[in-house]
Amino acid sequence: MSRPGEAPVSDEEWKAFVSAEVVPRLPDGFTVLAARGRWADERGARDEDSRVLLVVHPAGEAIDRSLDEIREAYRKRFHQRSVLRLDSPTRVRFR
Image (cartoon, rainbow, N blue to C red):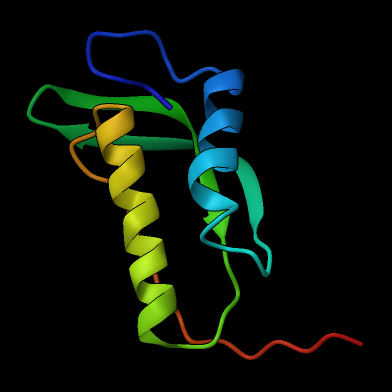
């Protein structure tokens, strides 16, 4: 949620981003988790608040494209160097 040389992304900015970029691309649903992360670059290590977008979905080109579009939109809107994407095969069951 931090931005280089600017105030962190506010809750209002995050909610607006989710409404504009995430909801239209993930109409079947998703979960957002508030997190605290630590990362390091050439200037040293730092902690920051972050958000984890959790999406359970079948594999496919359309969802891959949607997830990459969300990442790119976040990167550009909030001036990020990169936005992590982690894919992991899993089995889920609802009852």
